[in-house]
Figure 1 (cartoon, rainbow over the protein chains, first blue to last red):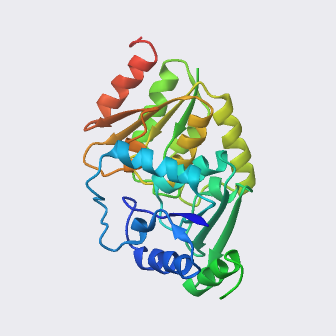
Figure 2 (tube, rainbow over the protein chains, first blue to last red):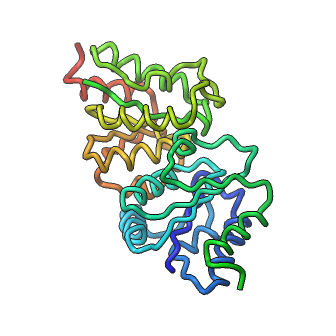
Length: 137
Length: 137
């Protein structure tokens, strides 16, 4: 499968270690994470040197190409919100995980097209990824 | 015209005074701002008492109904990102303003379907609203 992993970049990099664990788990199952740079601790809020237009064209192409979107919505992010609505319009399967005690967008929480998974511990997310990938291998 | 004003709620309420000025300016021109609650200083990050599902159904209905979307994207917000992509899919005219020194989503900045307006001063935004509304009355 091709996975579109969505997480905050300019919104804040405080969850990058968790993003990394999630991306790594998909990769351990043999899947391709198109957006693996989102989980790269070297990617700062400044982002990469490519142009904004390049980012838009690359990311929307990946959204079309992917088999599913897996978003961590804990950290508020314009990009992640945009990606979710964009993917929804393409009828993609969307999972959105978030830390239970964080107040995330109620518009997103009310969207029944998304499978929303609150978590208290990163291990719960990794187990969910195992299930998505067809069980622990 | 019916305006869908988009601004951060759970993402943070630090810009609510500016939101209020923008909404007020549209209203001074005689337009209806469907989402005027976003600019209400009494609306906290906790939001209102209605259900998440109600918010989703109401906001997506308003997005269908509106003549244009006017978003302040300065404060990172999942909801605002979602609303922009959702509106784009409905071929709505979208304006996105942001404080010039703030680093906003590069995916959004690279989207040529949006008219993006960086600003240093709220007065610039209000003047833009006057232009959108067909000149100062």
